[in-house]
Image (cartoon, rainbow, N blue to C red; front, top):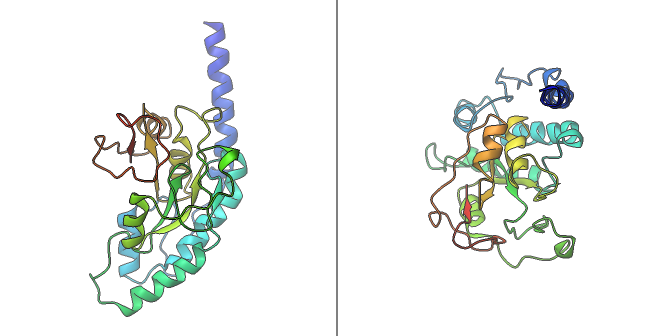
Length: 228
């Protein structure tokens, strides 16, 4: 009993140390009064529609959050150096195209797990130094769909089994919980989506195996791997 109490106290203290910078941050609002912090994808889409928010403002906020909190949380392994350029492109498209003609993910930043291939300046290592600097000839199937929908790939979450709570997609869950991004994409072989989501009090969706493309995603088990 004493051992359990001591363990609980240590866990609580560690959690408190992590949450202190978050709780003391205060809400970030745009010039139109829209609060990005804790905003859902639906909230962001509505703010775009009402001209309360731009993709550049959104990406700048998330990049600042990553810079400020990631040294403690270690939820993001790499950011996309082209993220702001992609945000400006999304803003231009939103101005030039008819309302309702753009995808629901247009201009929305998304973090990817580091086992999902991207044909850009980001690495795809699946946590292996052996793959650092390797060049991917094409995007993973799910990334192609995200780009076609206008989503902004803002960076990648680490895939490190020895440095995570409750599964290899923990970086994906932590990033959403700490407002480093509104939505992230991970993968699951055995609990790696649902368990970190539960631990971080965020919504995780684990599709039935085979419903989402696994093309150019570093595999573990073809019978169990799924993207969500």
